[in-house]
Length: 128
Image (cartoon, rainbow, N blue to C red; front, side, top):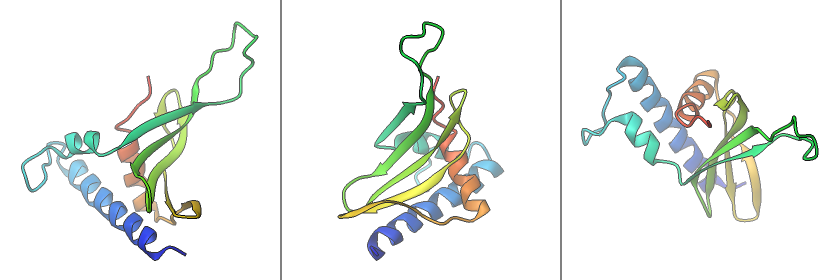
C-alpha cells in the first residue's frame, strides 16, 4: 500500500469536509485570506472530465449524454480524484479515489458525512 498517497487523500478529504461545513453554515464563508470558499473550490480542480453512457451512433433519436464524471485534484504520485455518476448533468454520487506509482485508482473508504461533503463539492461543477 502507498501510505503517502492515502495520507494525501485523507488530508484533502478532511479539508473538503471542513470547508463544506463552513459553507453550509454560511454561504459567504471565507478562508484565512478572506477568499470565498466557493470560489476557492472552483479553482481547486486540475481538470473536470465526463464520459457518456452507451448509445447507438446511428440512431438520430439518441444523443450522447454524460453519465460519469471525474474531478482531478492531483496528479502523479500521488494522484487524487473525485469520481461519480451524473443524472441530468448533476453529480449524484461522489467517491474519492487515490493512485500512486504502479497502484491503480483505489477508492478511499469514507463515512456518510465525508461522502456528503464530496458530493457537495462535486455539485459545484454541473455539466450543462
